[in-house]
Image (cartoon, rainbow, N blue to C red):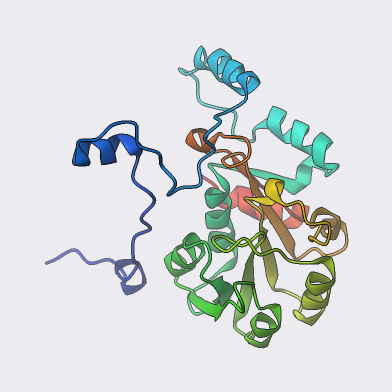
Length: 251
């Protein structure tokens, strides 16, 4: 008998990241290529980060401390957020996977802009849930259209701020109006992988919402602005109730 995977797994289109430069250079027989496909920081990590990594290599024979105590404490101090509201992940991708595992069941719906980060759709499908794709309007996320797609099956909404790949931002006023339209029980995920590059004064400041609205989850990463893509360090900030559930499903 042929081994078969569930249809919602076998139907997933694999996520194809940009090829490593070394692989591409081998294929094409070239050298000194410049990679633009994966939004990697060309300046590399801080010397302080490099020094910290060197120190930790001496402990490579030990399993890591799962909760990331020291990083969690530093993030808590920097963001002025309780440590109980922070979840570390193997990149923010990992936290996306925790959220879909913890809160989506087969047949549930998750709303997301399109085009945007492809991993949302993949992780929703892994959970057996349904992705509801809402086209952009003039290269920006259409919050009105997204709110209109909410149904009794909706459990999660993904918003990329700034959006990847178009770079559009969410304003304070527009986001405040949007969340008022969203029923209780629906998690609103703000993926802010590129937030450190935003300079527009009208841009949404997401963190204050965490004390006002228990449905909001903010995702951030050290991969882009901090140049640590190879270390896979990301985190989510959210209500402690959600944090507790994510710790139950994390690897």
